[in-house]
Image (tube, rainbow, N blue to C red; front, side, top):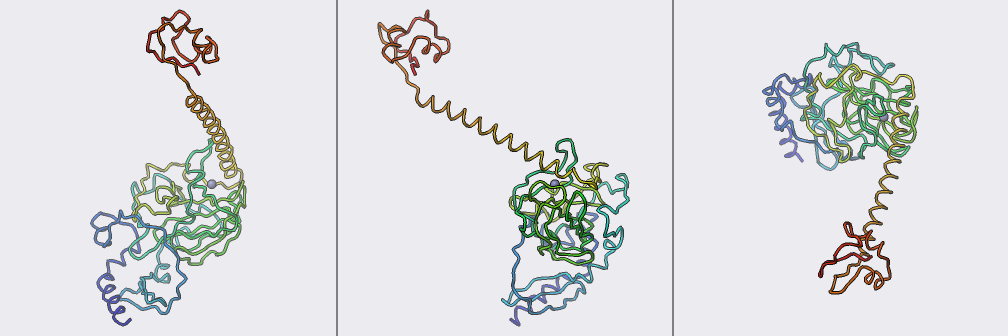
Length: 358
Ligand SMILES: [Zn+2]
């Protein structure tokens, strides 16, 4: 145990130089900065964490005021960023508003042309809010703007904070129903909508993977699902750029957002109802139609396959006539002609030709 601690302390001493602290700002200006800051490749994907219920025995200071080591009852340990230090970041004060979904007043032209974020840095964790195939994707759907992804779940299923951060908003919000917005250290915000229960309040710090509420169907929602959004400065972008929801994996540690991929509509917030339900409901109808078309296609294919499997052929022998063959197989000349494209009553039957008779 003592040895383990020494090793841990030595590791921290080597890592926790001033450089790590620069990460608080989370914006990387050059690739060189990135390489200096991260000992691990920044393009590495991150699996959704498995939350442990191990007891924390102790926390130990490191040479960095913002980094501690947590010791668990089973003798394992991990680094932990002290929220009281992270919370000093300006990002938690500027444009801070606990009532409105979009408190930013930034025009698209004033956004940086290209900005890179540490989504998960060396000392951070990540948990997929709900591992499931995306039901309604982001973007224009049914001529309306869908600002997030819809992730099916059952009412009462736990919903997790994807990343650590400070709860900016937690309230019933018209079209969104019960909505929680978390602002993260890197300036991004994540939205969790239609919850049946909210378990965190504005100003609260939440750790990645913490249960923040229960899934539901509040607001204008037709059936339980989690509507999940990712935004920067109020501009929504496709959460699937970050997360593969089907596997739960975070695609890269570092994410680059380009202004050219955003537009004025990216800032849209469904303030007054209808929008959400329309998209989800329209998708439900669409998928039901697609399902019935697929079922009809499948039935037709199966019928054709069954007919093909039941097909019977006759090899023409000397002296054969179509009427003779028809009689022999208990069918009609017309039926045989319909089964053999190009065949007519005038066709000369070549010996050895295979004619389909059934
Ligand atoms: Zn949605």
